[in-house]
Image (cartoon, rainbow, N blue to C red; front, side, top):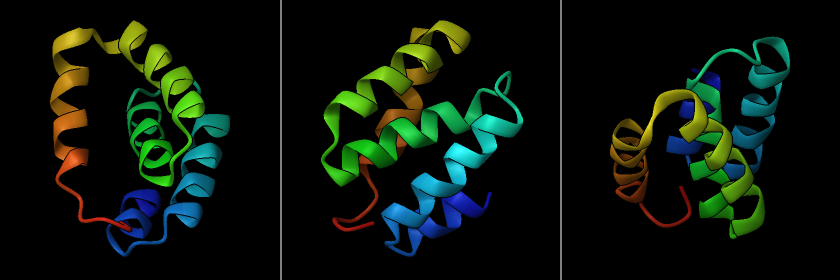
Length: 79
């Protein structure tokens, strides 16, 4: 949840770091892949966003992935 808080605070870089840590500690967990994909997109790193979104979609399925991405799009510019 720390990554989500940092993202909401506008600290995209810190959020990405937290999501990377979460993925390293629990590569089987879905949530960090979706959040890091959104954070990378906000940061302007479309390639990393796409890589993580592919992993997320493979784990969760298309409909749920689209729902999360819509939530992330509502985060104000800059986080």
